[in-house]
Image 1 (spheres, rainbow, N blue to C red):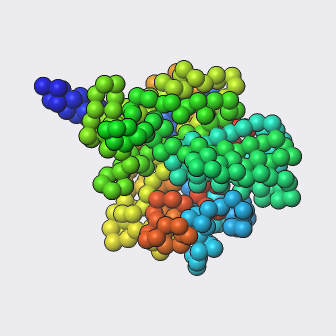
Image 2: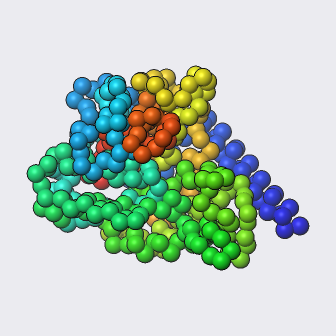
Image 3: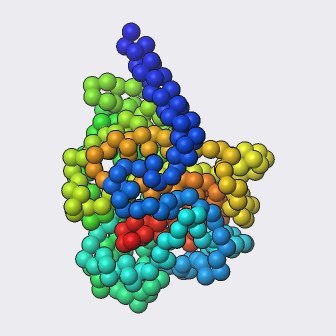
Length: 365
């Protein structure tokens, strides 16, 4: 009976998410005004920064690949990518514009403050992008770069500005116990390291899909219940709900701004943009249609559902749709650390710079 009850609970949640997904598509729910918590709407005003198109801009990129903070896995130019048109696109919202990134302005306004990226390797992508965007404005400024285990930081010493990264692929705890590696869906003990920040930028999704040899856990646990596996959307919803509870209990909104980076898409399957025989490999231009054929991913629906229920203000960096268009922006074979075809991460300079331009707009507009 217990298994049957769990099965029907999972079925009901998946069905509700499915129906919610169709409703959001019908209402153009990607609009920031409808998709996020009230606190995010206040930050965004009336402008939907996330609905727009990619336009050619000869003044891009915002920094060079010689930036000292770029990992080999993202340094596509260094590792032989022959084209550079992908570096020349700027995101242009339909209904408005947002301020061009100014690293000196960032340092002056953020003087003495700390911002931490918390999540998986997409957080690493965004962390390195922001440090390079700032560094390009003050290349002679004193900096300290520290990296140890899952922690990293770049400090701009002359301004007392610290950019940090905390690597945790699920946000919830992954621990080693006698029984094996356990993903604890209702526990966040690592959150103590996130306290005291002036801004937190969270992200998680990609590792929730891993199975087989790349799956880093043996069991899932919730309370006193153990699972060998469960529907991954249900697990993701449970994990994000635990994260939302942590934010509600631990974040002082008067001192800390909280952001959640939307789902970063992959481009392994060309059918997603109506070219079934392709992947990101060899792609040199964005998708220029107004409606991405693959549609809104179910993981986005889960994130949206959780963010609509959170009590504290969280700004939704809703980058999914604009990132879906960028099938051309992945390292593919031009990575210094990943063999094969990487259609998951992003080249630097590249797409994560736009994520940070939007973050900059949210912080300072």
